[in-house]
Length: 381
Image (cartoon, rainbow, N blue to C red; front, side, top):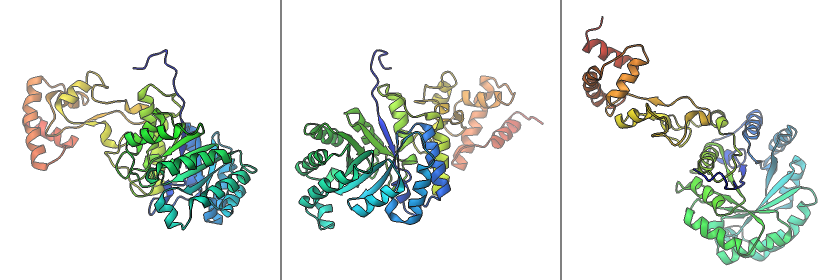
């Protein structure tokens, strides 16, 4: 547990569900769904909403305007490429902030047929002009984790000198590890005092760990999405990071975690993506227990084999399921809840039948199957 005298650190959480999340293949949010998601994110305590890419279409621009008109209690940011037409579209959308993305890796500069000198020129020109229209201007180092560190350091210094108020380090293809994130941020903190943000992708399954590490080593902000929705394997998941920050005892609790289950259900439904039952934090299996040792302990203390309680994310109570690995305590508990007291001896007899059936069906037993086994074994009519 944290020391009560410890000063809790602040974290700035940027949600990009409506921008990067919608870039997941086959995902399309309606305008109404976007407004609903935006409202729930604001209510949950997200610091900033990356609301979308206004230059993509007139419909997108109008949807963003409608979200701006809601006057939600969070910063609303639009996304733009390093092109004045994109920034103009962002201005028309009415967002108070804009994020401008630049290529920084050798590969991305080559693909876009640009030199770093072009990047320097655009930083100087676009940031200055953007600050005439927006209260907050951030810039992104696209593919930062594959960029040469000397060039990336130049980019950070040039962006800061041009007036950028925050710089995003994008792990665009998700190759970072917590150790590499630690080293990368440490290197850049030596050359700048401007706020840094880390944008994690989950291609190696480390997005949330990388986002947490970024905050732990001094990054001021991270971007996430609900359920980790995003391109390929997705992004750092808001619900995972929120719980990790809360359990660490090192950060202020800015996210209302009791709203996470309903928020994830809303996004999952709108995205047409079913939440995997083993999905960290919010999956159904997170609070299901079969092992006899675990169930016996959970009946004594709910945190014995759970890192947090389901009500902390607005979920239902944990569930003791019955199968091959169950123990007599879980059997007694199941029938006690139905007003049928079983002795330890009776539970042990029934357990043998339970394990036999679970092995034969290669799965868990239903309540009906348990009741039928009980009736058959003890000749109850």
